[in-house]
Amino acid sequence: MSEIPEWALDEALRRCGVAPDQKPLSDWRDATYATAVRLFALHIAAHEEPPVDPLLVEAREIVADWNRPSAPGFADETLAGEHDKAGTVVCALAALKRGIELGKGTE
Image (tube, rainbow, N blue to C red):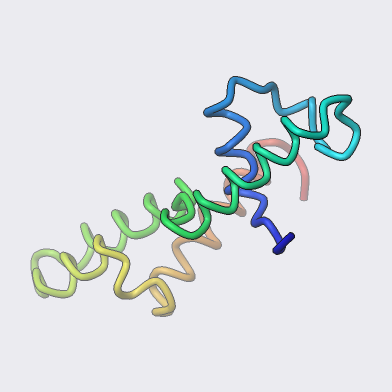
């Protein structure tokens, strides 16, 4: 069977009502059910986009808000994810992650 992206397996399990702590599927007693969930996960991976990191969405919004007065088109493109590799978005994302680390006291 093809490699299953973790996000797709998590989504298939969620939709099947399976608790995350019931992974890995290889430990399940019912091999037929495990195979069905794996196939469902492969279907999800083939037909859906992986979820966007909520911190990336927040970084996009920060950069878009900063640029909206002078470059509204760039701001809209940023919100749409067209500039995720741009330094401003990358730096905003890194700053958000670092802020969370500092807030937790893990440096």
